[in-house]
Image (cartoon, rainbow, N blue to C red; front, side, top):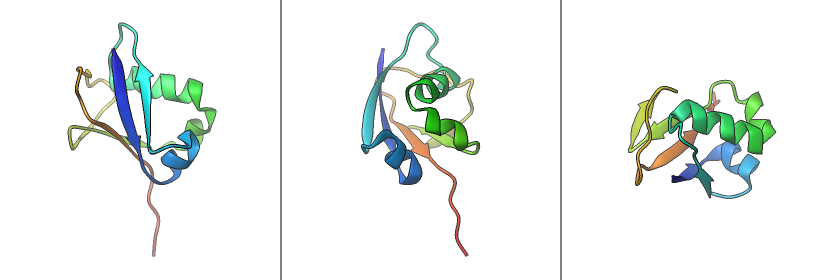
Length: 80
């Protein structure tokens, strides 16, 4: 199953694009997607607090992805 992932901030800089398509094997969890992204883009390992949103809701690594889900990477935010 192919998942389109939209990225913002530093996550967008890492993938060098606003969107990327990732093919998930039989394990379709957010955790599996996180692992695939880390393997393809090792700099993601530096983003310990990277959050995932699916269909506009924050999700944990155990969340199962389905075809057509909108996945967004939300990197850590800082400010003052």
